[in-house]
Picture 1 (spheres, rainbow, N blue to C red):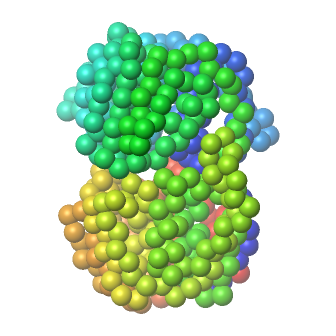
Picture 2 (tube, rainbow, N blue to C red):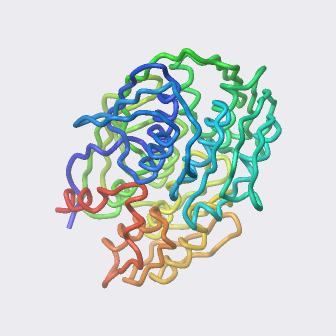
Picture 3 (cartoon, rainbow, N blue to C red):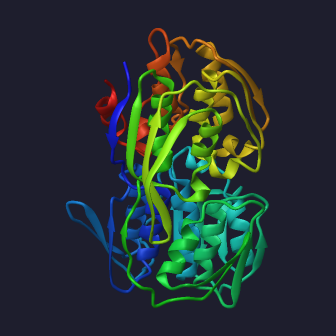
Length: 414
């Protein structure tokens, strides 16, 4: 068995969410091509439709006719998508919308205090129980604030920037480490009054935006699972077309290069402020590395699959400063460590990460996915190198981020 082929993956999920929301602010027609097919993005479209926005699909694009928000007549169901809920809280508050946001069981347990408190400081009338959904917002007069975020979070940053579009004065957000910056790039392209200065971003009330005409680059986080497969399986070689190479999103590629993975970047360019390019990856023997809190923001989504790669690397891989993994769709530190241990890996769980000694032979096992799409995809890749049968307790959760996962994997298995 080997991994071989060329992949054209669906659009980046983070950019897709933001493109849909910002296109909704435009009085006119925006066209978004290669939009992510993830259930999470479908949740964003559904919520925006309930707020009066018009969306039409063609064979390869989504047409957004925006500019006319209305109060929804029913709760906005964000499904499993934390990005949808957190960013919509900012977007809708900035547009003076009355709404109640709800989510599934997983989303209803995830922390929203980090969003609610700064929005309250801006003057938003917001009601929730224990800072969890359902969350009710009421039309409010908003004022800009200067907010120092205690964590590097693109969701906090984006929510406040979106809210700042409708606030009096200037809203400034400063973060300890630069998180993904797609919102800043898109807002600048739209013509918003936004300025960036190192780790601080400021925005003033803005409108009359230019329509978006955007082909969304392929999702680097989605690609990471297939990159891992190619790096772990002998005689493998895999190519990706138009992959997102934004420096705030290439932490995984940088990390596995340090592990010894061979990666080639071809035909790189800048489109709409985002770096993209074709990427080739080859099988290679790997070595252990260290990842700390400064590395984590740009690799947070890929840490589960990197942990799998670490089981096959020579030496010790240590990940620290990643306590944010505990409040994702599942407690991903627990999910990673428990499942890898069940497969025979040498893993030590830390409060803020893990230590993995390799290489070790993996054995098939029953995997507890915790209904978490990234855990499920990680251990489907693990099954390719494990001895014996590996079975997931729930693989349907994969559609949350990548419904085409299995057909894509089948297409590159030789």
